[in-house]
Picture 1: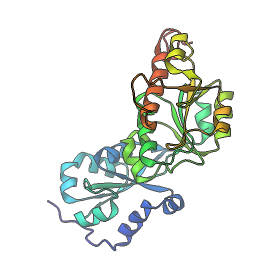
Picture 2: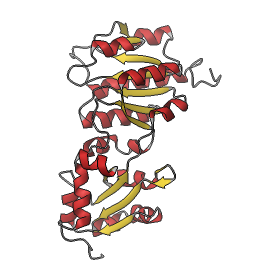
Picture 3: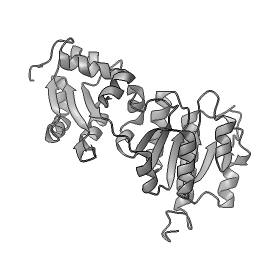
Length: 284
């Protein structure tokens, strides 16, 4: 097993990487951390604007042996690879049990205008979502449901927060993500492209099951998901085309944000793929 090159947590390279755990440093450098083999593998395969997303990799000797294919992929895209001691990797990592690989990646968010130009058919819009774990999980759900984009408003959490990146389980690298978009601009732009904008809210006056039964869910759709504690304010709900609730058939008081997002996004995905939907073989 090779000997680690970086053994001091006070190394300039280590200190520079560790600072990326803080939002102000991430914004200044336009770099973020991706931890673990799944995220680093996805980062090594991703390119944005013609440039490789992964720029640097810290790996313990054991992880470098176990994940030799990932280390090789990192070198292939020109990332600087550092063999580091377990203590160094632990100091850079933001997890309790580091997996031996931490990548430094370029920001990869997409301008909102490019999201609109792609004529998306399914979008998740996060308005005032503050918990990074929830944001990352919704991003993962949107990816799984086949959404074309995720949009975070200017009042939402930083999608490059390490907890959000981990919760996305690699989905951050799979679909366009626009950040810092005022909610009014987001709704206006999507609607101008023919996208129906629906607010997901437990107090909605429309029922998701009823909307599916009526056949209203097959067209291009953006779902607006609000804050974990207080949901969507009235002024945001008023911007949308309809406020839709997920029906509660049992005794549960409500669904959490990520669960509700998964239900709504999959409902749209199913309707869009049904005969007559915007993804059907008829092309309508």
